[in-house]
Length: 377
Image (cartoon, rainbow, N blue to C red; front, side, top):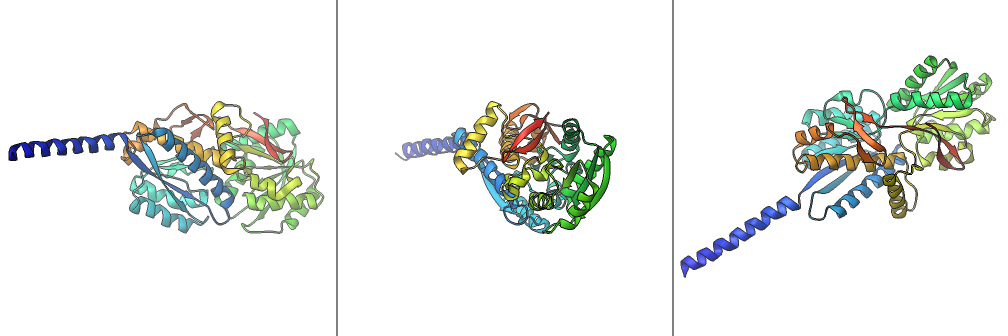
């Protein structure tokens, strides 16, 4: 009887172990950290990013069944680099995430990404567009097109469509992204033979732009080139029109303009504003149509570029996790990320360059009837 009992016990234990192995094999999960500016000055971007990422995670996990699932951990960097440092350390050392998506701002990324690089944790930037981000190290990737890619195309299309000959520049001189926007615009304008009549600056948090705009008005430019984040950009656009700068003098911006919040806050003054972009809502690609419909149904408003890049980022990271046997090995996950080529995403066919930057086609948009529409390609 004892032998039979032991045999039965052995069978039971064996079944239990097989069940545990099966559960591990078919119900694997990996931790994906997210660092977004959900409060603070860049909250208009971070809120969209969280919604886009959450939608992707929910859909992937629902479709996975008993397969690989994502455990999402969201953190708010409050639009402040020091807070970004704190949450990066928490995600890396406390939560033991396999990958971090974010942070929202390039200012923060310059401080936080070296922490992840040193720890050997992959980072996927989904809105950092200044040069030098991926040069931080071989664990740093991005699916956001850089200003070096977006702005030359924007100037080319604007010059052709608007016959630009002379412009004035206004930019924020205390933010990495707005300074990068200015630097790239200035370089491209000069190489395109467009005269720069003058340059004006402002600081983050400024509310009165009338002194700068008054000087610009007196210069009579064909367009105003603006390096600004959405909050300040809304004020600049509104005040430009209030001061009598006509809408025939187009305002042209970089990636910081890509927010419905700008249209909402600037109102009718935003009509005719031109901005380079990595994505446009009107794309008829099947994946994009489904994304726009699903997002709008869930959140009761349309997505923007930041939501689209976050949504795509989750799918890119998940693809790499599947290709690296579940994503738990950070180095294997990094190696799989580097091999992603021609992946169908809401941004279009997506690949990483050898330098781990985004490689896909951008667009030029203008604000028309309160919406971003394609100006030209």
